Picture 1: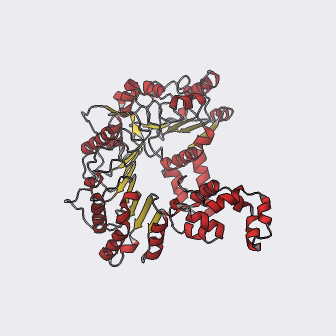
Picture 2: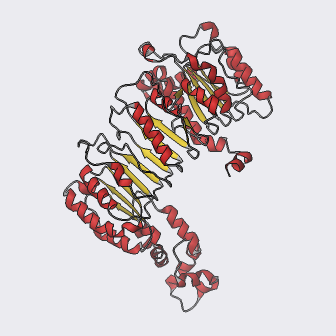
Picture 3: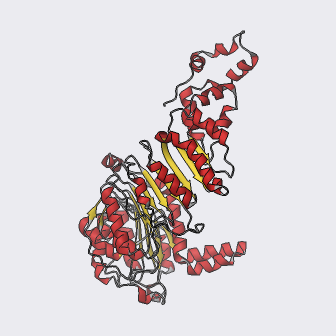
Amino acid sequence: MSSEAPKWAISRETAGPEAASSPDQHPSDTSVMLVPITRMPFDILQIIFTLCQDKTISTFPFTASHVCRLWREYVLAMPLLWGSLHIRERVPRWEMLKVMLQRSDQAPLNIYINELPFMQSAVPRMRKIMRMILPHVARWRSLHLTDVPHKVRRILLDQIRAKPAPNLEEINVFQDSFLQTENRSPNWRAQNLFVGFHNLTSVAWTSYTSSLRNLPTFRNLKNLTIGHGTFEDEFPPLLFIQLIHRTLSDSPSLETFKICHDPLIEPEAINLQLPTIAHYSLQTLIIESSLEVRSAAMRTLILPKLRTLSHDYFDEMVNLSCCNIIAQDNSLRELRVITMSGDIPETRITANHIPSLRAHMPFLGPAIRNLVNLRVLILRLIDFEGGKWLPDLGICCPHLRWLLFVGCIGCPISSIRLLVEKRMHTEGINPLEILCIDQHGSEPWESRLTRADVGWFFKFLTLKTRDDWVASLIRSAVSTFNFQAYAKGFTARPSVISELLRDFAKNSKRRFPRSKAEKQREL
C-alpha cells in the first residue's frame, strides 16, 4: 500500500489492551478504543475501505471520515480513497471536487463524467471542468465519458491529446446512439486521440458520431471494446474483417477483444481471400455481427489461447464453414463453449437465404476432436444424414459436460444413447451431465424421442427436451397471466436455450473447476 499509517495510530496498534484503561485518557477515547474494529491494523482497515468504495459515487471517503476521529485520521492518510472524481450532477459540487483533488495528493485519478453537467451552459461548464482537472493530467489513470455531447467530448479529448498523460491506462467513451441527434464529424478522427498513449491497457469506445476505423499500435493493450453504432451501417464486411486483423496484429498483448457491427443488409455468403493470422494471447473474442460475418472472420484466425467466444453463448455462434480451419490448424484448443450452426432453415421464409454448407460436413468430426478443452457443445440446425456426420463424442472432448442438439435432423436416438454409454465406460472421459434433444419439426415421427428413451437417459444424466421448456413456460403464463410467455414457448427456441446457458455461465467456475494439469500448463 502506498499510504502510511499515522504515527499515533501505529502506537495505538502496538499498545496492549491496558492502554485503553489509562486514567489519563478521556472517557470517550476509552470507549472508542474498546471497540474491536478500532484496534484493527491500519493495513487491514485500508483494504476494507478500498473494497467498500463504490465506483458509481464519490461520497464514501466523506462518509467514512465522519464516523469517528480515528477513522477520519485513517481516511485522510489514504490518498487513494480520494482519487475518484464523479462529475455526474446537473450542478457539480465544485468545492467537494476541489477537496478531493487536494486530499488525493499524488495518487492516481479516475475521472467519471456524464451528460448531466452539460444540460445547460455546456461550453462554460466544460471550461470550468477543464481548468480543474487538466493541471492534474499527469496523474490520470482512467477517463470515463458517458453520453457527453459530441462537441464537448471533442474539445475535451483534443485537450488531453495536447497534454502528456504517462499514467493513463484506461479510456472509456460511451454514447448511446438512440440519444444521439448529431451527425458524424468526418473531419475529426477519433483514432488520432490514442496516438501517444502507449501505456493504455483498456480502451472502450461506443460512439455513433465518431467512426473508429483505424487504431495505432498498442503494445500494452489488454482489453479493447468497440461498441454498437461506432461503424456506419453500410460498412463493408471485408473492411470490418480487415479491421479485426489489423487490430490483432498491432496489439500483441490483447486478451479481451469485443467488436460490434450491425450490417444494414444481411450478407448471404462471404467468400474472402484473406491470409490467416495468429494471435497468441487473446482469451476472449466477441464479434457481435451477423452469423456470416462472424464465421468469415473466424475462418481467418488462429487463436490457440482463446477460451470464450461470447458472454451469451447461443447468440454468438459460428457456422460449419469454420470447421476446416479448426480441423487443420487446431486453432481453438482452449475453447470452452461453442455453437456450431448448420444450413437447415428454421422457417420457410429463411429457406432461400441460407448458403449450403454440405461441403464442410466432413470436417465437423475432426474439428470437434481438436476442441480438447470443450465443456459445452451446441449443435444447431445440422442434418447428420442418419448419423453419418455425427462426431464420435464417446472418445473425444474428455472435459465435455453439456451436449445440446437444437433443431437438428438425421441424428438417431440410438447413436446418442451409444455415445452417452461410451463416455461412461471410457477411462479419462467425463460422463455427460446434461443432454438436450430439441428435434426439428421436420423430423419423422419414427425418429422422435420416445418415453422409453427418456427413461433410459434419466438413469444417467439430466435430459432437457422442448416439451420441458414449453410446459414450464405455460405454467408460468397461467400462474402470472403472462400470455406473452405462453407464445414464447412455441416460437423462441434460442431464448430458452440461452437461459440454460446463462445458468451454466454463472455456475461454470463452481461446477467445472480447473484441474491441476490445466493450472500448471497455464503457468
